[in-house]
Image (cartoon, rainbow, N blue to C red; front, side, top):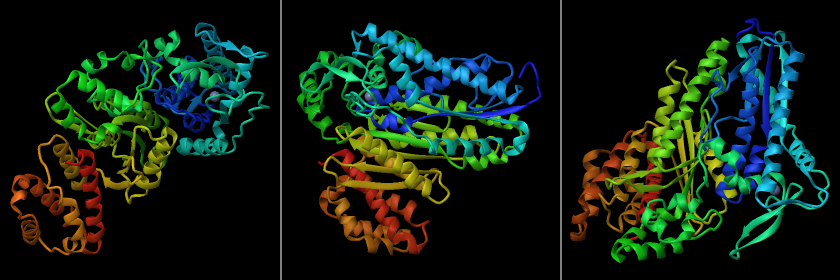
Length: 553
Ligand SMILES: [Zn+2]
C-alpha cells in the first residue's frame, strides 16, 4: 500500500454459481467460455480495485501495475481476499462499485453482440432485461471486516469460512419464466439468435444472455482482444482426442475441419485419412483405441488450509499467492506441451482437456499420465521452497468422445475429490476410464512412487510399439492372482514368468514380458504381504487399461 501502511479492514469476495453454469454446457467451447466469463469478471473487478493505493490483495497474487491476462486460460479464482487502510464502509463501497461496473461492462458487451451477430431481442426485452438476469443470476457475495474482528494470524482461513457459508446459502431467483432458454432451460430467454442444430442447418432459437454469449464468444472482437487471439474456437473433445490423426494435410482435405459451427464424428476423420494416406498406414493407426477417448484433468492443492494457517504474516501470504501464480503459468505451459487445453488454472485449481496419448514427431509417445506427473513435480518444486508441505492431487476421467460432457466432468471431479483426495497422505492420481461399452477401469497412484514411474513408462513404450505383449498375458496373469500374491522373492517371480510364458510364440515378446515381470517386482515386493493380493489386482487393472488403449491385435 502506497498511501498508508496501517491496515484497518479486510474483505473477502466470492462469485458464482460457476459449477451450475459449467454443468449446463453441452460443448467444450461453451464450457470454456462459461468458465472464462467468471474468471474475466473477477479479473475486471480485481483490476479496478488494484488501482486503489489503499488496497492490497492477499489472494490471489496481483501484479502492480496490473498486468492483464491475454490468454485463453481463465486465471482468476472465484474468490479474492484483500486488506486495506480504508475503513470498513469505504472499502465496502469500493468493492460494490468495482463489481457493479464489471457487471455493466458485460451487459454492454452482450448488447453490442446482439446487433453484431444478427441476433435480436425478443419482444418486451432489451438491454435492461440482460442486466436484470445477470444481476439476479450471477451471485456476487462479499464481506468486509474491521481489523479488530480478527486475529491477524489466521485471516485467510477465517474469511474463507465466511465465504463458504455465503456460498452455501445462495439461492437464485430466476423470476417468472415467460420463455426459458433453448440451451440451459434454466434462465429466461431474451435474445433470439441462429443456433446450429443437429439436422445440418441453423435455426432461430431463444436464448438467455449467458448461453448467447457462450455460443457466440468466438465471434466477438472484445473476446479476441481479451484472449489475444482472433477466431479462437476451443476444440471439440474429438479434436483433442484425435489430435494425432488431424494433421495439417487431413485438415486441409475437408472444409468441415475448419468450420466453427459444424460438428463431425470420427468417420469423417477416417475418410479424410484414407483419402490422404496409404491404406496400410491408416489401418495400423486406427487399431489404437485412444483416438476415440478424451481426458479431463482436474487438480487441486492438498492441505492448503493447513498451510495457510501456518503462515502468520500478511507478507508470507502474499509470497504464497505469488508461488501459486507462478505455478499456474508453468502449468499452462505443461498442458499446452501435452496438446491439452486448459479451461481454467486458478493457482492450484486446474481443469483441462487433453488427449490420452499422442505420438511426437520423433516417434516417441506422450500420455496424460506423463502430463499429470509433470504437473505434480512442478507444483512441489514451486510450492515447497519454504517446506510448506503441500502437494497436488489429480483426478483424470477418460471417456468416449460422444460421452455426455456434464457427466464426464462430474466423473473427473469425483476422481479428484472422491478418490485421489481420500488416499492416505493425498499427493495422488486417480484415474477412471469408461469404455464405449460402459465397462469401467479405475485405479490410483501416489506421485513419486515406483508404481507410477513404472506404469507411465510401460504405457508409453507399449503405445509407441517399442514393446508388445502376448494376447493372452492379461488373462493368464488374472488366473494366477493368488499365486502371484504369494510369490516370496525375485527368483521365484522369474521362475513363474518363465514357466507361464514358455511357448514358442512367446519368444518375440521377451522384452514386453520382462517389463511386466519387472513391474511386479518393483511394485509388489515393497508392499506388506497382507496387502499383496489387492496390489496384484490393482496392477492387473492397470494392465487392462494399457491393453485397451493399444487396441486389440
Ligand atoms: Zn441459457
